Length: 171
Image (tube, rainbow, N blue to C red; front, side, top):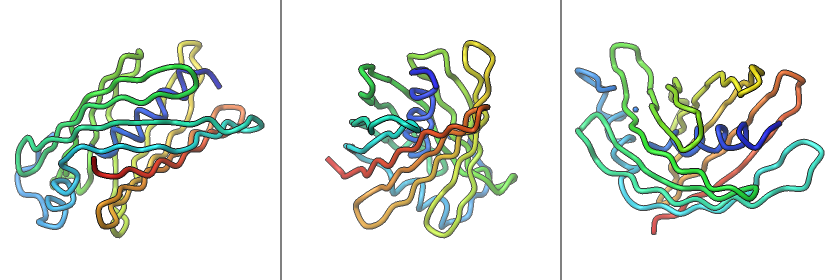
């Protein structure tokens, strides 16, 4: 697993906090999106199979764009590198799903599709690295009180996995 794949996975995890606007979204989904507005900080652990865990530190600024959409910008430091990302998140009522759209200082740009499960939203994405290898990425997040719990898992073509758990607190 390359550092780039680690960065893509972390970017997806953070972007899952923050996506195209719906015409008529469900009130609970709009409330969920707007509940993330604010400044957040998180520190967690990233584990690459067979290697010691690495610390991940993130900062995230989430702002309201419209009733249906939020914007985000953030930075994460991990594995000797810093990731910057920006994007949007929204609930797409016509498709009954969430979408997170992001760009980063890596070559990764993309749209992750998410579905709500209780008070959590789970995003899925298939990423391709510079060598053409693919990875399946799953990122989940949930808001409990004034904390966000973010977890993600990357499964590489060879079956190896990278996992991370990053709890966020409001600044």
